[in-house]
Image 1 (cartoon, rainbow, N blue to C red):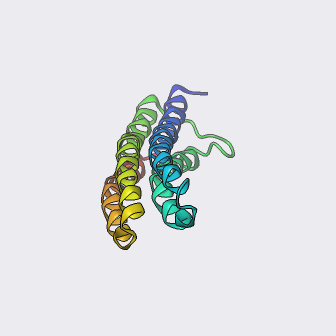
Image 2 (cartoon, rainbow, N blue to C red):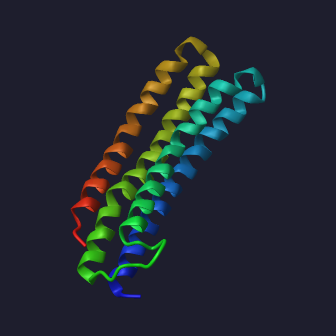
Length: 156
């Protein structure tokens, strides 16, 4: 294995790890709040599920970027030989989605936790709480888009 391929694999790992880490923390925050509500109002499971699942998308974005990197360097068949500079470019392309996924996953979990509290007390305002949570999602999507463009800018 070349150093360039190692850097590319590291980039794939960073994208998947940071996105998944942010998602797991965010889901944990929102899930803890939702479980508190469900202990008294189990009929609210559907609404609570939306708030708990939403921070999980950052992990999906990180996974998608990691998969695109794996396809780019052909790790599923015969890996191509890339230079260390190309590998570092691929590694750098993984950072926007990874860092944005980590931060937005955590903050989205906090916003979703507050949305759970709103939904428990005023069910008619549940959708407004989801809108706020979706606003945090925007930055994870932007990280994904930038990572995608950067990755496609690396010529192999």
